Structure formats: C-alpha cells, structure tokens
Amino acid sequence: MTTLITGGTGKTAIKLARLIHAAGHPVLLTSRKGVAPNPFKAVTFDWTDLTTFENPFKADPNIDRIYLIAPIVLDVFPVVKPFIDLAISKGVKRFVLLSASQFNKGGVYVGKVHEYLVERGIDYTVLRPTWFIENFGDFHAQNIRENDEILSVTKDGRIRLVGADDIAKAAYDALFTTKSPNTDYFLIGPELYSYTEAAALLSEILGRKINHRHLTNEEEIATFQQFGISPEYATMLNHAESLIAEGVEEALVGNSKAITGTHKLRDYLLANKQLWITDK
Image (tube, rainbow, N blue to C red; front, top):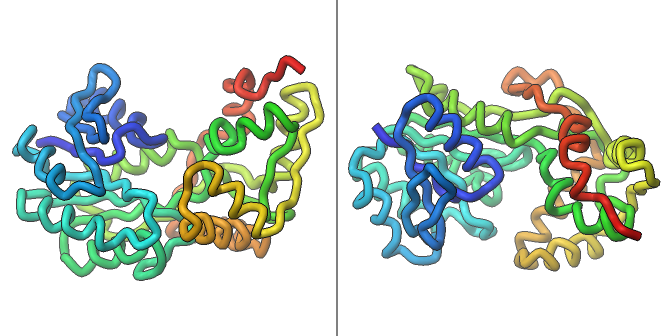
C-alpha cells in the first residue's frame, strides 16, 4: 500500500520519502507543479484548487496512509477538511499530521485539524516539533551571512532545536507501526540553546562574531512578511516565538509525550557552514 506525502518538497517530506523508499514501500509526493526529485513520483496538488484533490488517488488508488503538511494559511481547517474527507472516502486509514509544539488540539492553525482527526475516529498521529535546526540554513541564513546576526523576540529563552531528520524518522515510525499511536507527540532536540548561545556557537565555527539581536514584536512581524508570509500568519508566528522568552519550549524537557531526537545543532552548523560564509 502507498504512502502519500503532501507538501512533497518541504524540509521533512523529502527526508521521509527517502526513508519510505529505502524500506521498499511505495510512496507518492505532491507539489504544485507535479514534480519531485528522482527517484520519486509526484502529482499536481494545490491546496487552493479543489479540483487537484483527486489527483493523488487517480495516480495511485492504493494510497492508505498520508503524511499531512498543511498550507501556510492561518484559517487552515476549512482548506484541509475537504481533503481529509475525500481521502477517507478513498480508503485512507491513517494520517500523520505535522503540527508544532505550541499548536494545541482545537487551537489555532492546525489545532483544529488535529481535533478533527480525533473526531473522525481514524488512525492518527500528530507530530509537534519545536523549532527546526534547519531554520538557520534558510530563514536566518541571509541575515547571518550579510549582517552577522540572528533576529528574534525570544530574548534568553531556550529551545531544544530539532532536526528535520528526526522529524522524518518519527513520521516514518508513526506511519508504519503496527498499532497506530492515536495521540500527539512533542519532538525535541537533544540540547537546549538560546539564540544567543546558538550565535556564540556559530561565531566559533565561522571565526567571526555573530550576534543575537532582539527585535520588537512589530519588527519581527515585518521580517516574517518579507518572506511572503501573510500579516495574520506572521502575527501568529511572532506570538509563538515570544512564548519562547517565557520558557514555554524549555518546559517540554521531561514531558512524557516528548520524543528526543539525536541530531545536534553543532553538527548541522559544521556541515553547512558554507551557507553563512561571506566575501566581505
């Protein structure tokens, strides 16, 4: 039976696809253009176009489980619900939803999707990772490279930054375990870092001073919007980051529903240091 991965070009999606492929299971990806890296097959799928929702099931009627990555839309439930209903009608038995540590069941963004999966009574797992290690390689990369600084509203709040590889492994386990967990899990990294501490580590690796510059909420919302994020979604992200300063992420340490990954920030920074090298 086939696993469908929505958002097939995302941080965790390709890594998950590789795990599934390596284990000898069929996998199908989705993307707006219907393309995926070799050796994977993809179909055209667009959350804003209901007519594309049938495409995965036309391409492979054997889809029975889905790794669900929702679109970046604040009121996402009305967008995702029709696809969940269609998928169930096509024989899908298990969903693994990518959420985040601060999105509670029934709450904002995918919180309502989480709640709906529970209500439907099907096999599900909700993965709630903390902030990604890989954010240093995309969201923060240009500012580190050009201005020698990391920007945030987190102050001295600390986070167990988690790697996309660890999220993909947790997703694989949830998709293929014999008995579905039917619960949510926090996904955290093995080490606690504030962004000030991460900046110091990056300074050591790059051989130049990297600072952590504290932003106001308004400044951070504007920064998020520069990445094409809507004002509403940017405000939600800012609120989530501001809670880091209050110790919300650090409180996940020792939580009975937390899965601790193995990938470390230092290893990621060392392996990808070329991303932040500058000619100046």
